[in-house]
Length: 431
Image 1 (cartoon, rainbow, N blue to C red):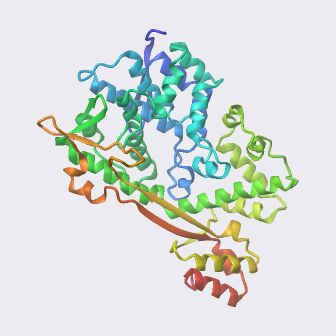
Image 2 (image 1 turned 45 degrees about the vertical axis):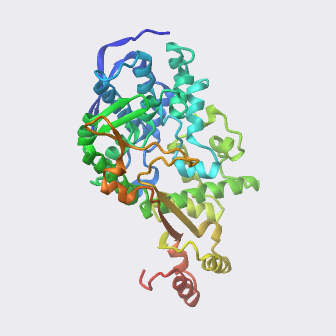
């Protein structure tokens, strides 16, 4: 087991959210400089949100450093309240730094089409033949396994797990503040300094002083607003729909033996569904965009059109959709097909949902870790029992359904057919 090794001089990253990110351990510095962590510079934190909020170009690298810094500050505030060994502190810092290391290009859209989960790749990077694994094993051969358990929420120390995976953790706090900053909105801002001051460590997780309840309320509402105003913005979702259709079309063409102008060598493992860790780590958003530039010149009209739409931001129109109206959707698909517009690629229902806050209910299959308030008497009370604001939204999942389609293709149809389809879609004549 390696002993603590401090840098000769503290390293700092200038950060627009936390002002500075401080690195004191040689161990952390080496992890930051690993190839797998540096790859996160080439993965956007917000996927396709930059189509909606042009400032939202920040990377998973930015966010991961921010989570590490918040974790470091949390541990500093706990110093006089609970004893954590050096190994426990290191687990916390590494979990904050490496929790997102398995994300791929345009993470969630890519995952849906190729059917994998970034959590599995994070575990593979920590445990596999990687620079990160070799650095982690310098401390202890079992350290990568322990860290994977922390990130996977199976580690036996619930306090350590809750700092990176709970309803109010270092990960969520950083991405709300960071995403709000880069997208230029105010929704995600909350009193981070106050929350850090009222955070208290317990064996089973973190709790918050009752006097800081309003800062926690502010955080919950910030999260709620960010999801519906930023993360689930319909223009962002439109770009995600187009992106998914590109990947779907590429898969179909490959399965049919389509002769691509240039063989998509770096995507072959994904198209063949035989992906190894080295293949995954070689993929980033620059690679995906490179192939889109090639594919927009392909003979296949659908792949060509979809890539052009994504690269030029010629996205799909959207309308509100009643998800119970199966008949309308079936009829629209038939009409699109008859009009020569393939509904597989040009008509899509997209659903989003969010549960802003929930609490544990005995007997339910999915365990929910509640946010607990520490009363002046020392008693612990679940947040919604004291907060009317949080009580009003607790356990209430909100859903949103939208129907996406290329309005320009519908407009280009013969007059009567175009008007008929637009009428069914509820699109105004002058749209």
